[in-house]
Image 1 (cartoon, rainbow, N blue to C red):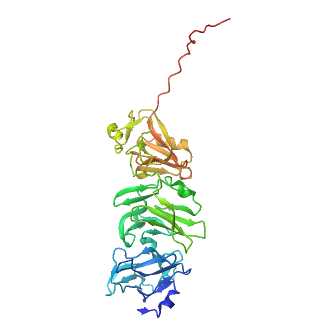
Image 2: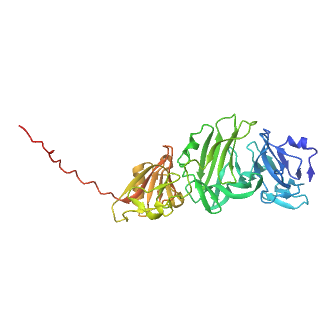
Length: 423
């Protein structure tokens, strides 16, 4: 293997070719020189990591290769094998991390792109066999995908953010931010198997439970979907700023911007205000972030607990319904729609009335919502984590109930006391 002559020569290059070695005093630089790839040590630590960072401001780390396998004592090195596999070694020459697929083609190179991602590319075919986007750390950069690739009904690649253990320890923490394939294109924050926040379904322009993200003038959000795969990304609208979305150790996300020289400034936070704890109000309850209400013709399942601010048992119908009973719907407006873990979508339904009929003909449909260009969503089970939004940009949820009895006709008005008819 060949080491490049000086770090200065290597700093000007974005490519690591087969059998070249990147040592701890050298870096790859993206063509724009905005990003670098190399080795770093967190403050007050002897552990060494391979990472990618914004050069300015203040060498901001955006990707870490070996977060769970740090190099103790330094002297790490990175090389690309003749067969196209990236291999990270410690000071003793022991392999501690590798990515890529072994190939008989000798035209493989590793390239640091202007997007801040590292790829392994076959220069003869143009095929990319691996990219750092497949192993995201705690940061999502502009135009980089967060989502999943599904082949043969199996999720093969999960592109998701994982929090650091602390602000100075890049080993994996407890929180993950992902686009969940078990839901209808919802972003969720999970701590292990426990959901702590979800975005609500995508409505064509933004996530239903985060309308303020769609209102900002700094970035635009896009969701691409098809063939069982889905990808979320965001795109800068103001070229004066650079951006990053960071999964914090405390379990929330910060949207940050900088002009490249000043410190990072947070302009959005996820979860947003008023979201409250996940499933605060139990089945069928509606949260305002701190307290709960039941929909019309629903009552608290456990009134004593409800009065003591324990809403976890949720709400039940005051009058049970079944499919032999003529049914109607009660409408809750301006909400983050319930968890879509038990929901189904039908994008071919293009109006509210057909969406209603689609729900009515299915005995197990408990509620529906119409999301415009995204079509109809029906829920087939309890409604969990419905949240009343502060803004007026939520959706309308229609909950299936026994048809309400019409009000009785008004009684004839009696003559007023002391007044008689005159000729």
